[in-house]
Image (cartoon, rainbow, N blue to C red):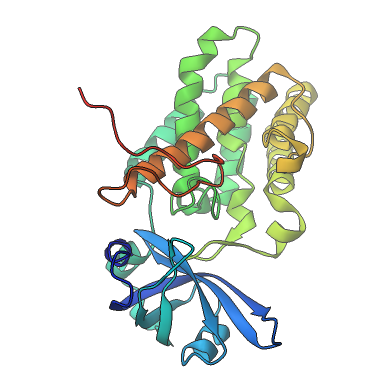
Length: 320
């Protein structure tokens, strides 16, 4: 993808790539003919394109599922200033060719920090929760969701939307909380840290797919806020956490999205819930900034408009 985007200045350049089908929707043109709106990508980025019904690639792409890996050939073109290639051929890569870690590493964007180191640090933050039953509650949730917490993305598009993104986002929030908690004496540090470690735990159930995460049935019908609430309630009962802390921890999960229109089930109404919600928003936005800076094409001054920031991002770094 990085090489393909570098060819923006020469429309019509032929290319061949192996890419993940991240999103696929069938639409109908004004003349009644179907067409496909497609997002394809690898670990270095993605592009959106339209595949019309007269394209040789149409039937193959329409018959593929999101998360499938495609060999595609086409020509680099732009639409409204953005890369939007014209596909000429497509074929689905068989699953038996996708088993090697090297192939997955080329196709799937991963967190820039080492996943094993992040997981070890996450465990240290769990151990730092001094309240015995709160700590047991966190461990019960982690034990239930298992490996999914290590590998899941934190989102499908907005922030930390890559393999190990949920783990990275959670650890970054815990680091920020460790620095900020001494400033806010009215916030219970154990409850806030437990809320941070568990706030997005429902995403381990919400998202499915090893190569291109998408919301599964329970994710669509319930969403990660409700799924996380269910995980935490079950874990708290098992740990015999007292009712007051259980209610407050549940409230953190239900309110961490910040606003009802952003997916929160309730508005933050305790010191800990307000704290967790604001730290979550901080790291989500800075995660968008960090990813944009990592993936910026050489020589560009600004990114395209970033949806979560509602603005383009200046890429030029300050010089000493």
